[in-house]
Amino acid sequence: MKNKTITDIGMDRDRILLDSRDLQERYVLGNRSQLTEEAKTHLHRGFIVRLMILQHAAVTLDAVLTEASGPLSSYKSIELTMLLNSFYLNLAGSLDNLAWALAYQHGLKDGLDETKGKDRRFVGLLNDTFLAALIDKGLQLLADDLGPFKE
Image (cartoon, rainbow, N blue to C red):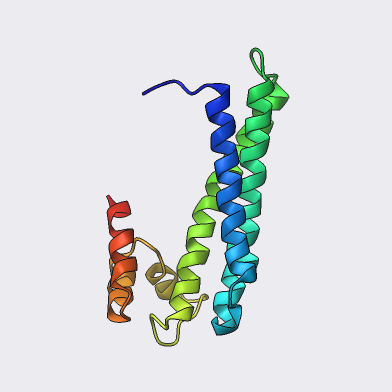
């Protein structure tokens, strides 16, 4: 694997920012009136907010690491560790928000309740039962796209 140059890293950062801005604009400018209230909640208060947190972490990590000319101070190291943890947790959370939005929008399970453990275990982009429910609702292509990520 080729080592990335500062230019490559900057281009990756710019691509991440443009991709996430594109996602936000599609949601904000798109026709949200067709979404259920539960789906809107998971997309806006969950996914979009988490996406902004992911952006902040990526940009901050890039800026600090690009400027570093030697070993990081203990304080900076702890700060970057917290950002990396934040990135991981919000990435996992954003995928969870997308799964809940899909579940509500397409009625993947009757009586879906976020307070019930069995429903929380059902809702997951890589859960076999969830993928089967997508297929049952005519979302075969989406289920097919998610399938490879299980491995």
